[in-house]
Image (cartoon, rainbow over all chains, first blue to last red; front, side, top):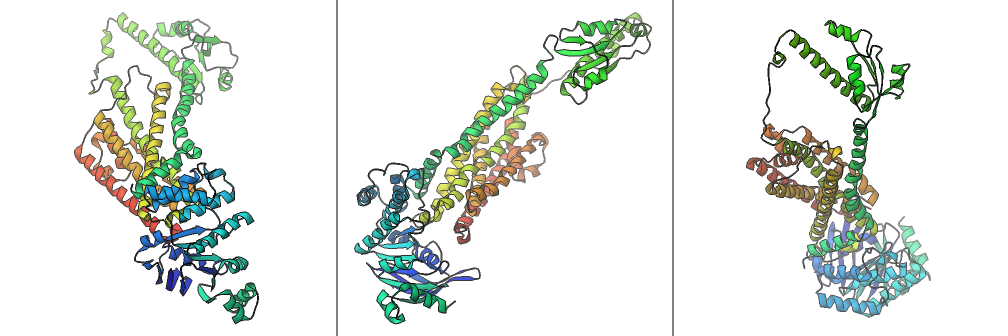
Length: 241
Length: 396
């Protein structure tokens, strides 16, 4: 479970995130919808303890991101969009193992987890090959496996389908839905309306660091009397331009 | 297994699988000196060997009277006399190495103890011509001394009058090993400082900015590993690579010294470069400590850079700092000012120079070691500061 309380982040004179609060329950996908520079990545980086909040706090499974960052990192898995961020000269297995070890897994648990992931993502054929020459889809599977090797209960996805072709994007979408089935709490940031509409149980619209509104898709459609999330988003964001 | 050792092992595995880094960190350093000094040695050999060849020195000589000195010069096996209508032009054009003009009545002037002149034409911009000039001058000097001796003998004067003082030289080292030690004390400090400063650069670029460029830094920061463990693992891997690079340079240098001794200015038989084991160990430790300083600095700068290219640009000045190693040419360890022991890099040069000359000054060693640990502490603190700054880590 994720509980965010009055989280703010200031970079010199720029307030990237302004006093945001929200909750994500177990087995729930919350879509963080906003334009580029709206504060989505900064919010996720704070939740992942990569950035220190200027004000406010958040709790991941009751662990404070400020007081217990290491425990928080044990609970979360994170998948970034754009570059998959793998070590080309290591094999797929070595890449996943490295992250397992850095997450303090013991040898047996790590081996079992990796074998499970190999089956789950059908990586048998290439698990012991260096990832440098992999296709984007293969790399995506390895990156996903790496993000969950330590079996996190909370997943953060930062624009995970940016730059992906249809097949690779489908792998990510299926994975997000699978995480929900496993009861994980999921935050998923995107600027694609269709993607957010398709995957999210709840949507938070963020603009210039502030939450504009949040609720289910039905809530938005009823409140703004529009059928299309794109129109709703433009209306909300447009009012604040 | 600690996080630091996990990171250290992974980084070394990654580096050793990277052909680009291996070429830059091991192959080039290993081959650089043998190739460079090989060419230099060949060049030096080429410019000096002609002197020993039969008919190797081509000169022109005008000597209508067939003077005695003219005959002595002609009798030299390595000298070939060529015809020339205009010696100055031919020397200038490189057709001749030198021209000698012995005027008429030269021997007569010598016999009657009058002034006798010889005109020599040579190209003062040509190394070969200058060498021939010295060689001919030596022959003329020797001839001149013979004449003086003959004249004194004719006047029944003891020729020892020409040598009022006879010098006898004594040195603490045998001539050959003294020369070897001098060469070593000039070259070793300079080379080791240069290696220590440039050795860690290639791997620091890969482990800092490379991590950002590949997009692997962010996932790394989301693991349970603390930033300090990541920093230590990377720092130790960079230091290891720096030491390996230094060893590759030293290996290449040792090979060059064997294969191209001419390039090092020591052709002397029996020249030795032996160091006392104690000195060797202390020098190795100092070099490793200095590599650690440069490794931490290189990592701090590399993590600040946004990309490989930017890191390479920022790190170039670091290798220039290593050039301070050239101070080994003007530091005289036996009577140097202690101020040198407090100047960064210069103190390393000074202490290595002392050790190569067999001087073990405990106070000097203590001062330099204390400074080395301070430098390491400061450079690691700087790297740590950079690693903990959000603006640095997320500077993309």
